[in-house]
Amino acid sequence: MMPLTYSAEVAKARKAGTPIVALESTIITHGMPYPQNLEVAQQVEADVRAACAIPATIAVMEGALHIGLDADQLSKLAQAKGVAKLSRADMAVCIASGRTGATTVAATMIAAHLAGIEVFATGGIGGVHKGAENSFDISADLMELAQTPVSVVAAGAKAILDVAKTLEVLETHGVPVIAFGQNSFPAFWSASSPLKAPLRLDDPAQIAAAHRARADLGLPGGQLIANPIPKGAEIPAADLAPIIAHAQSDALAHGITGKGVTPYLLQRIYELTEGRSLTANIALVRNNARLAAQIATALSTTAPKN
Image 1 (cartoon, rainbow, N blue to C red):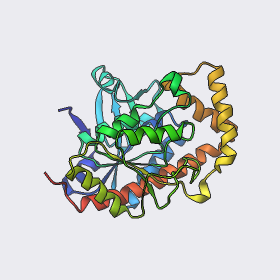
Image 2: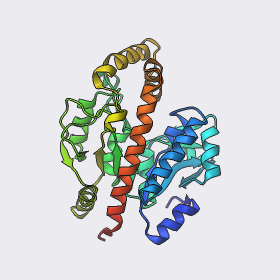
Image 3: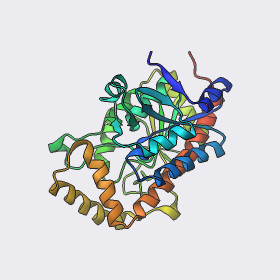
């Protein structure tokens, strides 16, 4: 079994049975500059605590897999240079080589499951990139949702993706896609989209019950909880469509491929929206953290069956 390094706060929560919410670390290292990245990470952790759960920000630091970071470690990670972006394929190599890496959705799910954490809050999942029928560029996040039993709270899939194809892949692999409180599938920076969500639940306790029911049925994989960005923070989809198309055209012109596509597009959209996309991103991540804490609290009242 992989040795895990727990923060003092998370270790205490595990012992006491306090609800815990996993948080990814790529938003810190690859999402925004210092010191804004640190401030946002601290805000998200505070949101989880305010909702009566404990945050566990996950990262690999000098070869050690950390479940929860203390204040000094969070600050150090926020200022670190050359941090690897970790998914399922490269997580073990980073650990074995003693490097520092930030976890994506897939890697965070793996670490959370190892630590017995059942709920994870992120911004948006990766998925099927536009043009994937030629590039085969499909995020490992989708396969992770199909095999690792963690409920992931996100504002849908990132709007830069082919969201319809992303939903088709999730359906093929038996991943429940549950919109929270609405019938429309959220569109990341926008609260709704023309796509109907496959499933809908309106209560964190129901989401927790569905998580438990999947385990009782012996079904592999997790759930995607699609939580719409608060209306006051959204950017209308009609405003975003030409901006996303512009950014994708720029990426193609510059030959951006593989892991470089998502960060490039997000940065270009940030520039084209004059910062509005980042403001919306922060709002949706914080909103997801609050919902994840409610789900984790509901799960903590019902122990999993052996």
